[in-house]
Image 1 (cartoon, rainbow over the protein chains, first blue to last red):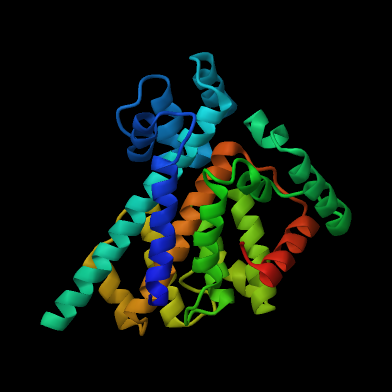
Image 2: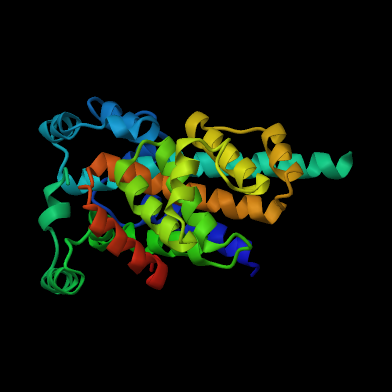
Length: 108
Length: 193
């Protein structure tokens, strides 16, 4: 396997693990955190910040999630899924742009 | 950290390891290290494998350049812990801390080559805006960066966009300058595994 594929394979393995491994949060909740879409309140505040403005996460965001019944282990998993999910979209966008630039270059 | 399980949720073997690290390094165990030891089957093991492959796996980007990319992406994300950690690591790898500071202050005027500058510019846009286009990539390629180097840089960018988010969300405690330098020495010697 070429080295570049080892990097992408290692990334795919991480994505697969956080979405599909046995966990405390359900696979459905983890998928929603990963895609930053469709979680019930108050989670969208915390998960949305993790995805798009992580420096603004506060203690209160975690406190609100815990007060609505989420355990620390569930939040550990959902925050990780949100971070890995947003990053996977960035990575894919970069690789897609590179593929397009490379194909266009060859065509031109 | 903001979750008690990440401060106190470790077994006896891991606690012993943390104690040994404190004794031998004479610094607290960085929160970045603690995170990957918590339920490692869920995140830590595979995160370390991916990060190590991106940062230390085969690439024509030197380790110093990859550490600089990590620091730069972290700066764009305003992730104070990761900026501190990878500013120190890149500075040690180049043996030139001033160069790293110059890049973080202004990538356009920093004393680096056009290929690295164009790559950092693209990684910054991708991190800041969540997207880049073929035109952005053509600019990088025309600066002399190979498609493989772009892929390698995107892997670094992916690894640190994940770590930055977790550092800020879980609230990694900042280290002293000496603590960051000690961590940098470890990362250059042992990598991320």
